[in-house]
Length: 159
Ligand code: PNS
Image (cartoon, rainbow, N blue to C red; front, side, top):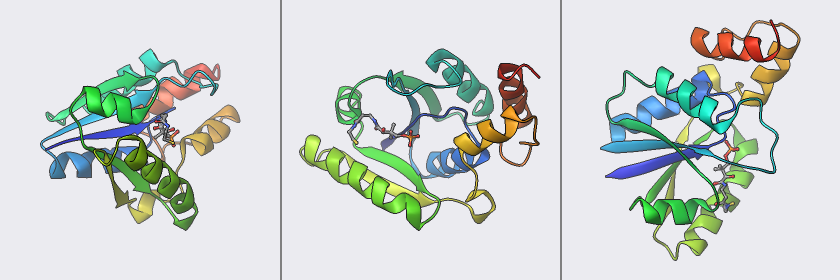
């Protein structure tokens, strides 16, 4: 069975990686797909995010990296994928995620389901925005992202 893990991944964190590794162990094929969101200002371009994801998931043979624009349900249909994976860090994520899941179910006429994995407690506080904020002040992000990603983030901030 195939699944998609959609997101902004700006940048990918240990929290995302934990979800990717666990989903890859559940599904036959996992596509991690970066949303090309023109309305959101990102630190990394979609191409950069795809490259970074490829590097940090290279040990996972059934994971492929892609990007998409537009609606997730259209992307899933075009790629014959019927399951979307999302991570839940805390109860605060739930309301937003529930809305997305229900919207996708409606829009896809029931052909795209969402499966939630609860984030490992170790990373439940980690977010891409927090990583960017800390890095912008030259703070330590080593607990939140792999060294390869940290280097790229610091470079963006000119460190
Ligand atoms: O990492 P993020 O930013 O929380 O991911 C959000 C994402 C990409 C899952 C969501 O914004 C999305 O799927 N957007 C694509 C547009 C879409 O399908 N919208 C309808 C469902 S709300």
